[in-house]
Image (cartoon, rainbow, N blue to C red):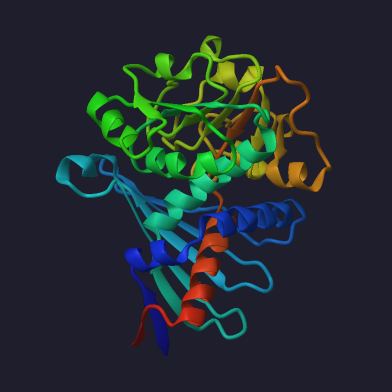
Length: 315
């Protein structure tokens, strides 16, 4: 068999951010219409070092997609990325492997892309101040994508390590590093939580009326999004499976009523409402669904085939 291999650099070259937002919107609609087959992700844990997740997904008309992603938080001290991933595509008619691509960039961009999509649909039209809490891979991806959906005039970045916030802020002339999460969040119109914190990193009292909050951190059994924020806001999720126990769902939502959250697909289809008032708090909590990887990987694969990018290997 011949398999197309795509490196991290080639994936970055091939993935168009605006096309990604449209593809994510389409996949979320399909997800809420039960057009996507996605068994719950499984986990292999090595204990304290970290864990490996497997995330399979299929939608008729697309390739069968499987992502393997490892999360080892101690890797930073070793100079190794904490999140590493491969995405494998299989022909849906024969089951033949057709592509293996680096999945780290896709993971970062599809996650931030879903946050940006939620902001496009839920944040106030006059949102002008963005707060990003966390200056790692996800902080950088959010800084890249969030300004595509709102015209932010000010961007504040906070991190446990101030120098990291400063370094990220250098990428955008509107951005500045601040010393604390509270300083970033106070009076911000959109707040993006992009940390691996095991406990809440913001308080509901810091949030301005009408703010939109996104949270993409995954650190079971807890997580970065506090219960006071969840309870105060209108909650939006990729799927109600987010309310299941990890590794399928989110630690912050486990045990809560699944009907307390609106699926992004339901919002996009118009079957459930979005923002109800100018001063309402809206909250998007990501579990990280395999349909997002499928959306991004399919865009990359199809464009690679059209443009003749990548290396074909005989296995």
